[in-house]
Length: 193
Length: 193
DNA sequence: GACAATCTACCTACTAAGTGGTAGTTTAAT
DNA sequence: ATTAAACTACCACTTAGTAGGTAGATTGTC
Image 1 (cartoon, rainbow over the protein chains, first blue to last red):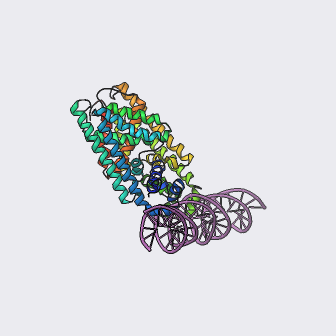
Image 2 (image 1 turned 120 degrees about the vertical axis):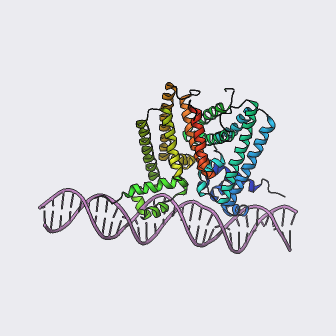
């Protein structure tokens, strides 16, 4: 039989939460040990090295995020609604007192193991690609302003959201994120919000 | 007599560089010791604790940044030029393979000593205030779009720049920053760039 | 001018706590 | 009996920080 709750998953949960709140270099196997309630050595059984753990955390995060984007795609065809719901994903995270996992790792980038770096790059690439598609569709449908290249608009949106999360947490004011995100959307969308 | 080169200043230089490239939790007194060429203990003579050092690094960075903003103010009255030159400050840093000190510290925020947090908040507040002024002036002069509140536009610009630096470094492509920054300015400025 | 006291800026040598990681053992389910 | 998943007990190393000493410059007093 499988253990009551999947320990590896619990370890990933703890690691993800720690990275989102403190960063890659500010969490240790001891922290996870305390949160999950198993010994340090047992974590090494599931994830031999810290870079293995890091890589798996981001891989799972990418997959979760992919599913959420898919869900948005299934829920609506309206590019503007899609963007609003995409922004909501980040707001949800922030309200849980977490930053974007990959936004945090981007700050730690120079100290990351190569495998983790690749995962982070992958996350950004696939989100950028999805946003580019949404914006391109919106341009064709005439509901999105087409002032800039869709690709650039996507990059701006992604960068703006990451930066806004950073600043909102520093200010201790989630509203700061909402305001910036709202303005970002208003810049892109034709019908003023 | 004073030492040939100010050691405290050298320590601050090393610490700042390390934070801008690796983050607060990924640098140690040993790193600085190696860079400056004095023993760890001697660093403690100049900066008793790591939080003292951190606080002083940000305080000096704020001061440097304030001078650069003042220089921009003296160089031109054109709000659009001011914004372009302000963006250039960040690009200069990125070309030196450094992120914004306070952007990095914002990612490490939850693990920072209180004194350092306050400094980081201060940095954001004064940059936001300056940008708000520039944008307000530009609105009055009719060279800046007034779609949103100047305060919000300032926050968006700051967040966008921080996020763009993060993403540009992850992609290993400084051009990414330039493109996003250019688009950000185009959104704000009336005369299309 | 001489002398002692103090101060600056560094040093060696150390500590307690924490780091990721390993070896070998136990427990419990199949 | 095998095996997965945990354990205890360690390891070498790094962390920020401390204790105490020293060479040399500065200062105040006679």
